[in-house]
Image (tube, rainbow, N blue to C red; front, side, top):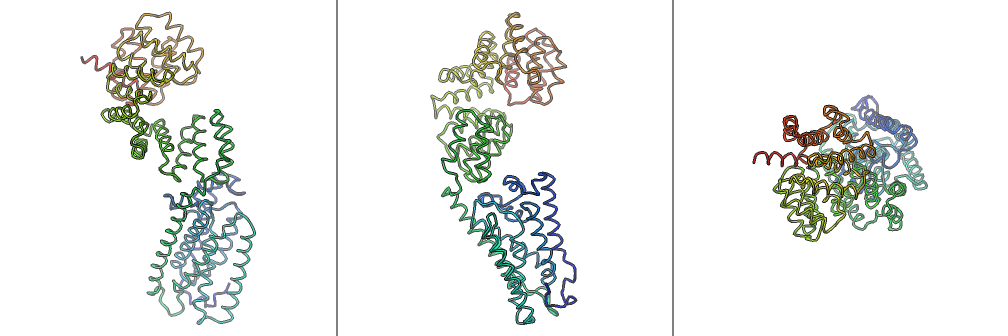
Length: 570
């Protein structure tokens, strides 16, 4: 392409840093994708990968992820896509950059790219879009605009031939896009028109003219206003689509995975949901169902990631917020959990579950007053809800009020005899009361209910073992410990503590295997209470002090140590 202007007269000379930098940035991004995804980057990344690297999709870009409007310009769907865009841009870009100068050329490139992204979102809020083609088409539009805006001072034959070539090329490319699926023609058209407009809004400095004129500054202001208007239209269209649920799969599509989850078949549900999300990666219901599947597979992190996708579309979906709060609690991200629980309470101030969730969070944040306030509110709202009483029972236990805790746990078990959380709470509360007979009985009820395979089982075994040592029921203690060691997985925590209680290893070995603060809190507590049952207070004392000073305050074991120290003060 010949510009019709002498090269020595152009203000930018032969240097085209913007074109070089943009090509380099796209190549680097493609290389990064290749490093992380291997051959997938070359043949064509899947939707999840594209979104992870910054591809655009309206229902996310218009729900807080505004950076996708620009980042998608550097993400390509395979090697051929990247090569074609960069080849065309590298051929055409330098000449147009020399005409307009680096700064104006860069402004026009990103203006066209942003308008292309917003046009794509407006036309298809649920469609994934990626690639520099919208901005590259903007360079074509800029060149075309330059020819039209300056035809009176350019050679007539030059203008006619170049306009003809540009129009033929654009018609061929757009026609090809309309005939093939997967081509984002909305972005191409938006980019072309945006670039063409820049040909009039920005001046191309000819020989003897200043690089910047008043026209340019008015043009930049107008470009900003156009972007704001396009953003507003795209935002409104996207949120209307969300409100109309135009991006939601039909109930029939979700029927099979829902049935799989009800029948406790998460792997089967996952296969169906992955296929559905490959077609519609933004679908909130499918993400929510997959979050439930991940929960059944004990993958809290992935469950949280999926429910966050649901909340991007439906930020006030109450079950999703409740689910998120519980996942954050389980992942010990209590401050984030508190923020989410506050939203739950604000959305449903008469629903006790929000107060139960927030009470348990305040318990872990050691805010005993607010913990009890929320627990009381949960009971007031649903006086026949077993979980509400169980939540308040833990609040009382956190305050060292073992008698009140036993009453609430007993009420919860009366309302729901199978509520294991209340049974475990009452086990700890009985131990706080030094009622070792009742505690041992409760331990056995838990084991009868859940079996040795449940995560609660080792703790019921350890508590029962300490109680039996206190009661001098040593043969029963040894029999229980032997049964546990034969049944429980040897490589899992807290297996070493049970080995210690059965005199297979010493306490130092237990502490060596307690690889984090949570495990050390449990190790110090159970070893200390086992020593106290042997009247070895001097050996137990440093461990008790350690738990009080360094232990995890969210753990029941911390509450047991606090209650013990309170008794000693009295």
